[in-house]
Image (cartoon, rainbow, N blue to C red; front, side):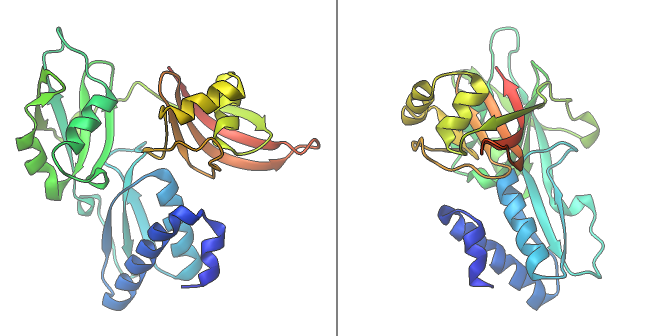
Length: 260
């Protein structure tokens, strides 16, 4: 692997870059496909960049449904013809007393992680407003389903669904264009949600912000292409495109935004 490849990405992304390099080498040496766990959009972007730069291998992403955010990656030699079945993704619906209880993405994710299974084995968690479905790697799905009897204090169970019964998620990204003075986390949050930089800084430092599903406490964290930022109480932002600079040296962005 070309050592200079690191300079295009963040320092904290090096372990992931090394993992992608290992996957690529495995496919090249064994001349057989390799399936990853679920990747977030930023990881998918890094993996795609490295595969294209370094190899003639082919690849395909799939997360269980068309608009999936978190997707598994299949890397394969050019002779190979993959099918969607090979992504080994199961979809489960959450059965709970809808009349008496509300579930949330955060509560469900907390319950799933509480089974002792790593986040990478779970794909998207989607809802149409009342029903909830979860995409799970098949290799752990039946174990997870057996473990779950409650979500918070709500009685719940998971039941496998057929692919024809996938919900239409009610949340969809609204495309917005804006300019920012820098890609600092607090600057982007302040601009998008129209709050002061000081307020944005407080939100970060008090643990209310996640970047790519990981809590970050640094207001000066530098964002990059396809990062997803969750701001508790406000909504979510995805950095879809970084489009160069204005005459006044501001950075032009195309964002996906979900406002609460």
